[in-house]
Length: 92
Image 1 (cartoon, one colour):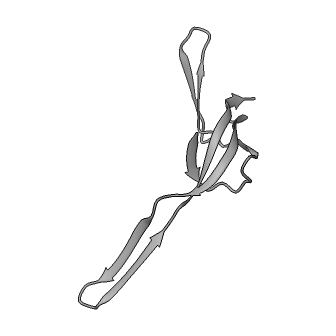
Image 2 (cartoon, helix red, strand yellow):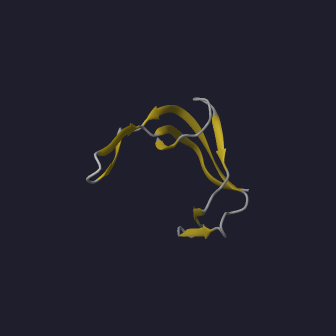
């Protein structure tokens, strides 16, 4: 399971990630072959399943100006998405 910034999809749905920057495959001799895109690899994708949406931990933002009696404070949460990788990177 992985967590990332919010992905707009319903929990339980499958999503295809098609913007792949790097692909590492095991060759026939047992060595790994690495393909680096320029900037993306054509035809490579990964399929994931969205498990749930959640909120990250609280972050406190504090602004002030010295000698002016100006202070502001916000508490914000980052929206996160937890997902599972079903098919690792596949090159078509």
